[in-house]
Image (cartoon, rainbow, N blue to C red; front, side):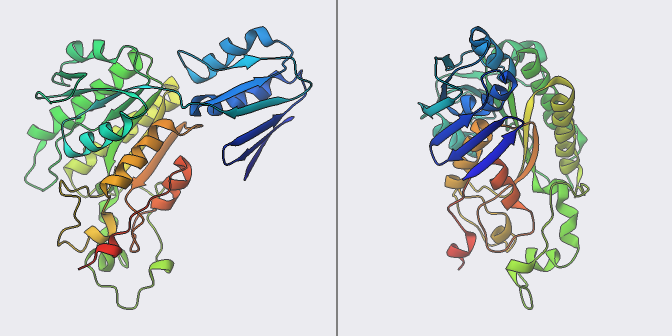
Length: 339
């Protein structure tokens, strides 16, 4: 059970039942329900100015539609679980492994569109170059949430600015700009653990990444948290840090809800591979799908940097804080697949 107070309002969220109590004149308390509306709850109740209810909640949430209905019930707002709100979600880089896994999962409940640099065998996907702002801007109209995956993924030292600047800097800035111009409410940016990758040169994290566990207890290893200074381990990581900074700007100054996901390792085959670091960073396809669904659907998001990986026994990065922020529970653990 989660209890949260807002002056005269009390929200009691227990599984799928929600009870909200407030004095009829305390209209501001209804704003606390906005996240519940976005998550798919139908809100009913008595308010001093019921004629404002739809417009007020839409203004708070930036929604095109709202399931709010006011009725004459004494000093009580009551909600029952309703069908999850269907969102229009645009995924850049939808043709890649990560994009395909996420799109398949989201398509069950939402309308999924996408942009890719090359043709993709999926309905609703446009072929466009993200560095062409004029070409991509119209594709964001009517979109509720953007998941920006498209990037130059190679992060070895030989990958220079000639490849990174157009794809990871200009394209990312264009996607943020196009989303903001279209009034997109939520933006999910695919960042990378490499933004903090140089912590892996320090102990005990260096030993964990190398698979040297002697004398270490996984339950007592200090974790690298999102609020620690970034320590990018290369130019690729620096471009991802810039993408996070753009997210902070659009959240703080423009009111966009932004989740930056410092992704671990996602293999085409869903396997961990031979690198011992994989037992830290492995992100199963199943957990990846559920995690990004939570990134899109979780209520009460302003700006979050979260680490994305499965519930692996050996951790370097603070993945549990991200699970808590998003209300997500992973199901897989790399240790269960150790060879």
